[in-house]
Structure formats: structure tokens, C-alpha cells
Amino acid sequence: MCNNKRKIVLVGAGMVGMSFAYSALNRSLCDEMVLVDVNKRRAQGEAMDLNHGVAFASSTMKIYAGEYADCGDADIVVICAGVNQKPGESRLELLKRNAAVFQSIIEPVVRSGFGGVFLVATNPVDIMTRVTYELSGFNPNRVFGSGTTLDTARLRYLLGEYFSVDPRNMHAYVMGEHGDSEFVPWSQAMIATKSVLDVCGQSGGKYQIEEMQRLSGEVRDAAQRIIEAKNATYYGIGMALVRICRAVLGDENSVLTVSARLRGEYGQKGVYAGVPCIVNGNGVDRVLELQLTGEEREQMDASCRILQESYAGMEM
Ligand code: NAD
View 1 (cartoon, rainbow, N blue to C red):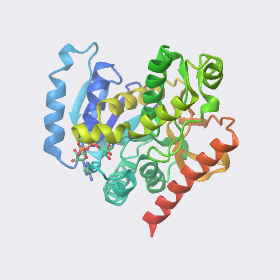
View 2 (view 1 turned 90 degrees about the vertical axis):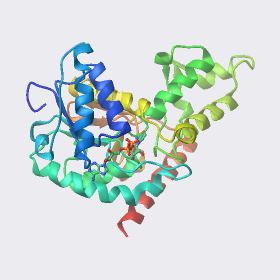
View 3 (view 1 turned 90 degrees about the horizontal axis):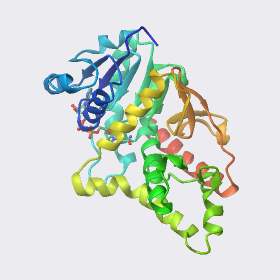
């Protein structure tokens, strides 16, 4: 932490950014929130609007539209700037458009003397996080993305519905790319400490293993379905970002499936992908490597290969 006051700079005051900021105010996430956007007027208007809610919040928060120089003493820079996913457009197709946006953001943040952690939400999030790492030159622990945090929350919710169990007692992860090649390692899915696969096998047909595949498909396609219905997704990711920031500001050592740089885990090097990590004041303190089955390992390899190829394709 940089000082006693908890300070976050949000870059990108669009739908995702402001859903995060609104949720942050309601959850008393920090003491100071700075909004930076290429559209300064929009950032000013959003700051005014949010400030009018401070009187109704449970604690005060200093909120204002600022500049990259304000990052100097910030704990976290959250990046939600970019262009939005169009109906039918894959996350990877967004890549080149957003890489140009990041060029104009990372350099002035670093120049400000920023000593905290970068948290990236812009899609394709695994690639944009890697771009942030490369442009910043920071230790990779201090650069991570929202990864499959939201997908994991969706999965736990759906599993909770299916098994009629509180989602907080469902322990299962979505791993790999935040996108089409993401997967669920079912061998690691638990109701409390009992394997989901065992529960299905012992239920006399009440719970079906085949249904697990349907649920993971539902999680994978959720963003596209929301985009088709209302053009964009933002509330869920806004709340996921607040959860991740809380783990950082509170030095929580929480397990979250953020997008982290792999350094030999799962046999991968250099790629950023969604994996369970211990998140604390250092950012990603470490990757919690799970014991995947052979088939799950192949799914992880395939997802990381796609991410490696996209990143390499962008560099060409
Ligand atoms: P939006 O268009 O509402 O907001 C984007 C904001 O970025 C705008 O205010 C725009 O002015 C700003 N911006 C553009 N270029 C900039 C620059 N160079 N510097 C500073 N600000 C700049 O879009 P949104 O709906 O808020 O989505 C933002 C991003 O979040 C998209 O990439 C979207 O795909 C992504 N997203 C990620 C997840 C996830 O799970 N990681 C979920 C939903 C959306």
C-alpha cells in the first residue's frame, strides 16, 4: 500500500468502469477514487453524478475526474478503457483496436511514479493484461486481469441452482482464456469438500454428469447472450472488480481466478490466463496450481495456445 488512504484510479469511465465505481461507493471500497477518460467531460459528469450519492453511502469517498499524474500515490489502477464488443464479434477481434488504446494509457501511468498494482478488465482481458505487463515493465505480480473471476461466479451460481446449495459452498473454477476456449476442471469441483462428480455418480440419476457440460457451456456463452439482449455486460464485471480490489486493499490472500502470468505452472511460460491465484496487497502473490487430469491439462494447453497465438499475431 502506498499510504494510509486507499486510493484507486479508474481509467475508462464507461459502462464497466462506472458499474465498478458505483459498486465501489456502495461497498466503501476506498477513500479516494479518480476517474480518467479520454472523454474528460464524461469523466467529470460521472464524478458529479456519483458525488451526489455520497450522502447516501455508508462512508465518505473523495471522487473526482483527474489525470494520469494522479496515479503517483494510487494503490490500484483499474483499466476499463477500450472499445466494446459488438454482437457477433469475438473477444480476440477486439484485440488490435484495444492495443492502440493501451499504448496511450500505460506510459503516462508509469511516468507518474505509480507504485501499486494494475488490474485490467478490458477485453480480450488476458491479452490486454499481457500488453499492460509488457508496456509497464512491472513485476508480473503487480499486473493482473479480471480473468475468469466473473465466469467462475456465474458457474458457482448455476451449480448452486442445480444442486440446491448455497453458491458460497460450491467450489469450482473456470480456467484459461476469458472467452471461447475457457473450461471447467470438473475433477476439482466440490460441494463443500465432496466432489461434484461423486455427488452425481452416487445420486441414482438425480444429478447427471452430462448436465455439468451444459452448465459450463451456459457460462461460456453468457456474455454473448447478454450482449445480444442489451448490447453490453457491466454490472457483474463491476462487482467482480470490487471483489478483486478488496482482496488487494485488505491484503486478504483470497483465492480468485484472475488472469496471471504463468511462469512454469501448468507447463506454461509467459502467457496470461485465468487460474486460481492467491491475491493480496502484492497483487498476485502466487498461482495455486491445481492437480488437473490429463484431459483437463489438454484443455488448459489448448486455451493457452490460443492466447499465445493471439498475442503473437498482434505483434506481427
Ligand atoms: P464503454 O464504451 O462504455 O466505455 C469505454 C470507455 O473507455 C469510454 O468512456 C471511452 O471514452 C474510454 N476510452 C476509450 N479510449 C480511451 C483512452 N485512450 N484513454 C482513456 N479512456 C478511453 O465500454 P464498456 O462497456 O465500459 O466496456 C469496457 C471494456 O470492458 C471493453 O473492452 C469490454 O469488452 C470489457 N468488458 C470486460 C469484461 C470482463 O469480464 N473482463 C466484461 C464486460 C466488458
